[in-house]
Each structure stands twice: as C-alpha cells, then as structure tokens.
Image (tube, rainbow, N blue to C red; front, side, top):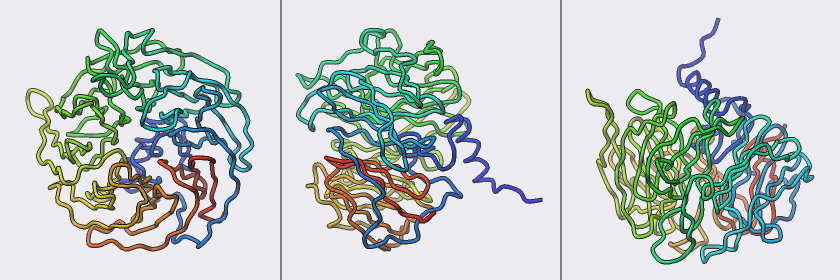
Length: 424
C-alpha cells in the first residue's frame, strides 16, 4: 500500500474544497485550479518547447482582456461583440463556437480598447461571468442559458463612476476581480453599501449567505489560502489587503496600502504565512500574518519600492517570487526578505509602464507568455536565470494563458489560440 505525499494530499483536498468538481486536467478559473498559476501535480508538462509549436486551431475574437479558461471539454472566453461584453463557449478540440451570450454593455475608458476584463469561473455545469459594470451572471455551461444574475450597482448599492475625478479602484475602471467558488458558495468583491464589500452567494440559488466589509474593490482577484493555521479569503482592495473567514465573512485583518487611485491589480501571492502584493506606486510589499490570543494580526515586514510590479500577477515557487519588474525585466525575489536575487532584461516588448507577462508554473520550471506573444520556458531557480527554450506563438497580448490536456489556450489582440505543447 502506498501513501499519498502530504503536499499532494493537501493540494487534492484544497482543489476539492475550492472548485468542487473541477478535474485535474482543467483550468477552470483565473490562474488555474488553485489561483496560483501552478499546474497541478501529476499533469503532464513540456520538458522543452518546439521551435514552432503546433497550432491546433485559432479563431477570431473581439477586444477584451479577459483570460480564457478550460473545463469539461470547452474553452470559455469573453470579448466585445457589437459593444456588448459577450460570453462564449467553444469546443477545446476544434475551436467551434458552441454558444454565445451577451453579458452587459461594454465600458469605455483610456486604458485599453473597450471590452471585458474579468476572467470567468467554471464550476461543473455552471459558468459565472462578471462585467466591468458589475453585472454577475450564472450561465449553464452546456447551453449558455441564464440561471441567475445580480447587479452590484442595482442590487447592492455599489458605485460605478468610470474614469472621472478621483474615482477609486473598481468604481473607476470596472469590476475586474474574478469571483471565486468555495464549495457551495461563490464569493465576489462587490463594494456595495451596508457591509457588502465582499458578498458570498449560494452558487446554485443566488441567495446571499453572508456580506462583509465596507471598502471598495481594486482589480486584483481574491484567493483562498491557509495562513497562520486557518483558511482565509485574501483580497487586495482599493485601500489595502484584507482577509475574511470564507465560511461566515468575519473580518480577520486588514493592512492599508494607499495609492492615488487604488490601482491594485496583482493577485495576492502566498508563501508560508507571508502575503505579497504589489502596485506601481506602493512597491512590492511582504505582509506577515500571525495568530495570537486575541485573533489574527498582520503587518508589512518589508517594502521594496524599487520592485514595484505594475499589473502582471507574479508566481511563487519554493519561497521565491517570479514576476515582471518595473524596468520591464523579469525579476526573482526572496519572499521572506523582499531581496531581489536576480533580474533578466530584454524579454518583454512593452515599455516599463505596460510590460506584461502571463506565468504558468510547471513543477520546477516556469512557462512565460510575454506581451510580444513569445513563450519562454525557464528554470524556477533563485540562483540564476536559465532559459530552456523559447518560441513565438501569437501577437501582442496582455493574457494569462490556460493550460489543459497538454494544450495552451491564449488570446492576443485579434484571435483565440490553441497550441499543442505535450503530445497525447
């Protein structure tokens, strides 16, 4: 009789609790099954990259920054169709569009061409999509029929101003933080009145299970992780980092992070009991979470303003952060200390203000999709940058790709692509 390794056992339990019926080969939400950018243990990953990866299919699509997700033999994606944020489901093998449904009127501002920005979440027979204007809809994954919907502004008194004055966070550029499934619940950053900063819904019926907090959402998607011995919902809001008990919404701790317009976009990163976030003004910040006799507390133990990641969410491997630095360079940072251990230049095509990378951790290696459409496979090694292979796969993009069944699903400014990385 063999025993499952502790780390693998914990991962399997976490995926079961967080994503319900999600399969190991699926990539059903933002940054993968656990929202960490990690491919699950046991899933086949490439040892290298072919010079010209095989394109299985590619299809045209409208504007948008929402990343694709994969579940149950379908790839789900959003784009702008006739000035409406539109949800699509396509066959993973052929790219044939199976259904398309409008979600909301598009929001227009100076940040990018008008289109959806929030990545959908798939949970078995349902897919949840959220618009920039705060329309949250549950669709049937098989046919696209609307199961339930709610609107943050109309139903919870949330504010959506748009790009005017000193509007903060989601009220300015949209509700971009992807909701998260937790067992029987769907949790979203709503920013409503009367304690509806974060709202937990029954994922089947739409019934509100709990509501908590009085802040304004940023743009970063929340995640659930074990910190200081307890499961915690970690959010990066417009005014700082906050944690809630995902079971009942009880506020656990909050650390202020003040910037001019609350432009906080990086998904929180976890290493042990350290939470790491970044913004273009505040810098890279390491927050230590502890539990004492009076409950949880958290404080910033280091801040590195010279490592201010802008809006590309980094990944963590063995206590080290890998992300896009403020000089449009790839950086490796020790998360205990905030010390940069190395950087690599000339990988990204964007200038320092808009350079972007989508990261997928594949065991002890990392696959990077650059903003210029290049794949770079490198070792997750804090000693040095070691590139294994690179290949051009698409055009310019700000995309986090999805990896499922040996294929990489990604979008650029014009098309949705399926690229083969591991032979069946």
